[in-house]
Amino acid sequence: ASSGDGGAGGRRSRRVLMFPLPFQGHITPMLQLADVLRSHGGFDVTIFQSAVNDADRPARHPAAAAAGYRFVTVGAGVAAALAETVPSKGTNSDFAGIILRMNELLRAPFEDSLREVLAEDAGGDDTPAPPCLVVDSTLRGMQEVASRLGVPTLSLRTGGAACLVAYMAVPELSDKGVLPPPSRDPLQLDMPLTELPPLRLRDMLFSATSTHATMAACFECIIESIRCSSGVIFNTFDDLESSELQKIAGGLSVAVYAIGPLHKISAGLESSLLTQDRSCLEWLDNLEAESVLYVSFGSLASMDADELLETAWGLANSRVPFLWVIRPNSVVQGSGSQQEQVSLPDGFEEATRGRGMVVSWAPQQDVLRHRAVGGFWTHNGWNSTLESICDGVPMMCRPQFADQMINARYVEEVWKVGFQLEGKLERGVIQAAATKLLRMEEGREMRRRAKHFKDRAAVSTENGGSTKAAISMLVDLIKSL
Ligand code: UDP
Image 1 (tube, rainbow, N blue to C red):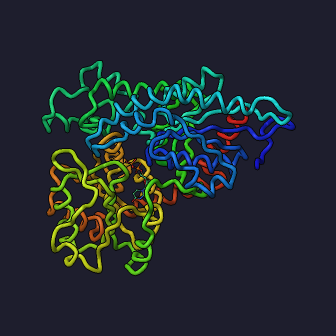
Image 2: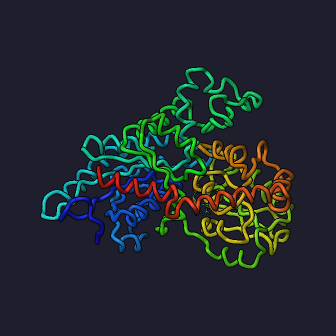
């Protein structure tokens, strides 16, 4: 079932191949983009998925399969080795090393899968126009394979533009001896980076466990992948990051398409790896407008048992209504092992009855859109940050690794739609922060600014808006490749 002219008379639609990194924060925007390309360009879509956590994806995607999406599993033969790459240490995982290893493992199996897909298309009267591949910017290995086989590529960057600008500066900062930081002295880490205002040295630490060399190799992979592609697609919008987008277009000499916020323009293929507990939406229905703090740290970040305790009592003592997501395995013991079942402290339930709800995974976009939600305590993954901004919800920020510190810094210093909780996580600090965000003028001012961006995001997706225009240019580019 295909539509669109595909750019060549008599041929079937051009097929777009897509390959996300198999993490929640990367799968979701890729599937949203798939929907946008199908609906705006009439393209047929084939999604490669690595045999990690989503090998059963087609079965979980009846609606997508019915709509004509095709799913191809890559790397079944190396599934055991791939499974070992899945981050098992929460926040303390070596994310840069994991990305490099996934590239190594997936490269050969992807070449086999891609050859098969290309062979299927060859021959016959209705030979489709040759496909192009939209690949996650971290999957440089797949991009190289595609180029070698003559398949043009586009890169999907699932982080913000500000983050990529920071990554682009890493070679220079390394040459100058600024990175890696000579010590972890807090005063030194607070040093502003004159090359990247308003970032500080601490915002560039990426991960407590990836070495500087691994991190730099991972960034090089991302940047080369973008540089070697026909264009880079961002889930952001012009009014939020125009100067950063310009720096990327100039610095990497690549066509840049800012087509976000994707979750506001795609029909939303089911992409959640965990089952969402929708009962929290009914619970929210009974609460006052803008009164609830939503607390969630995404799909990978973790906390230790002490932080769990402080968070619980901080929320309880604040008297603010809250919806708290505690993901299975998200509490890590001192030994590094994960607790499947998390126990909350004695007395917590009684202390918060009627104004607190804990779930293991929430329908986050619906939660942030709910009128009862007035603030978001987040780890500042890019999707969470953008989802919050585009629904006018101000944030209290507790970034942990990768781009999260950069996003949080922009939230606080550039967009001024939230503030950071730094230092040791203590109940008194949490209580004060929740009160400030939900009950005080400072929080209200941040909410007003977030609503301004919500409006700008909405304008960008309308006719004449920057996102709408970028989508149409992207569709034209794909048809021309
Ligand atoms: N998410 C969700 N339910 C939750 C928590 C998160 O559906 O309870 C979704 C959220 O809407 C976002 C994604 O998971 O789209 C998390 O991506 P993000 O980039 O924020 O963080 P990551 O998980 O990559 O650290």
